[in-house]
Image (cartoon, rainbow over all chains, first blue to last red; front, side, top):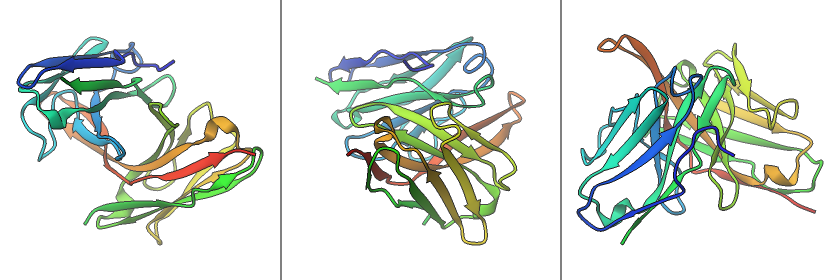
Length: 110
Length: 127
């Protein structure tokens, strides 16, 4: 059971907009910023969004993040086949003194 | 090129020990904190341990506390994860990941994230 809660799966057709939610608590998302990681099949994770809504250089602006209270969400617009991957939210937890991850959301592009 | 390369993964029997290494290159190693994150087969990401740039602060997940020891050698740009009393549920790909920590003047808050990841090394605990 992951500390952060994500839906296990999401799907959309090319060009659509999809959102992935991430729910936490006051000790993690409520107190700290949220990061999102993308893991393509058989590869290491890569940071997609940091500090709730910041994109590293090279990440397309189709990807956006937001946070409100103890929840966060990742939005992907103009869905493309190469977006098919697993997506994880993460935040530092002040009570556990460690990083906590969501269980991951497998995105399928239909 | 900024890079982290893990090594040391192997097949080990339950109760055994293993030492993982992570070699850093392409950046000023001694100013960054580093984390170990693992991923069991077919499962999600699980944070394992954190070490600050000077080794003054080290944190462990409850699942490994008392069994794993995280250390670093800044002179060698290297990190080590000593894993003892290994169990079947320690079977996973182990990634080391650099942590960037900064301050946002816009919102007046600190933030951090894992910005560089290695490709991982596989640990299998089985008899």
